Image 1: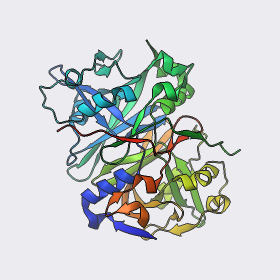
Image 2: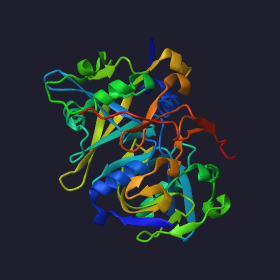
Image 3: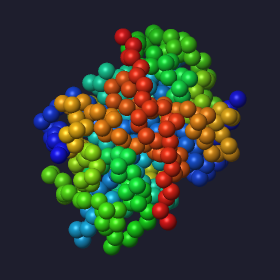
Length: 201
Length: 201
């Protein structure tokens, strides 16, 4: 037996709990941006994914009523660029530190003990300790809701940096990458428990 | 040491291998649509995620040059509606069957041995065997690339159905859900190997 929820009736809190619990596991985009004063911003988003590889495109989105930082959306829009940093097991705790609430005077890199490296084509900070980094240019921002309540940043990936031990040619070694994913609430998963399904002919 | 790839130079095949290997784990949206002749279409997408919970919104996208089926994009656009079905371990093999290439005469539900149930507010088929189903209305289609090469379907979630054993109120039990996620190539992951990170204050 299944229970049914009409989202117009249940409100956005239930929508959050249901959707964030059911649509799993989510990849984590650790978004690096630069403020107008030059300082660095870094925050994790799990409403994030690749949406295209031709043109190579990622999206991340932040809600107005969410308790997640949404400065990243505003800063990406203002600067027109951002970085995506892959979250491995080794930087999971540091990622979690940057999920806190900070002011425009704070530097999340310094607070979390991370090393910023400015991109080769975008003027935004990458996390040196991440196993891979994407340099992205904003191509569009999609507003949802009337306020808007959510803003979806669409970015084209111009450059990818990958730690050498993670790569065999252009094939990614998932064990060396050791990415983590997001589940509901404060729960995350490792990506070690893998299995194969052979594609039908 | 890291290696750098400028995507304009490396081409879309490398972009696919790098991005699909690095941006992991991805949730799987098993998209149900209905053809003009009334028959059912069902195909999995991992360029898929929640992007907002207010308004409750999901996206999925299909590429023109991808070997993934893209009928779902066209059918969702034509009908203005689709369903998202959550892929659990129990339906992983059936999901994989529906990743094959089919013609407009094929019914992927029948081929994969699945039970279609028409939505309560959208005229599109849901997978009865999935632990949860989302009924969605298309609100926008975002075209990327000049052909366009990729089309991103943006859908508002109107109704959520969840199997009763998966829910405690509106809290989702991840063990009962037993969702699987997508890694690179033909590789998937379970969502059992979880850990907690307490949110900073």
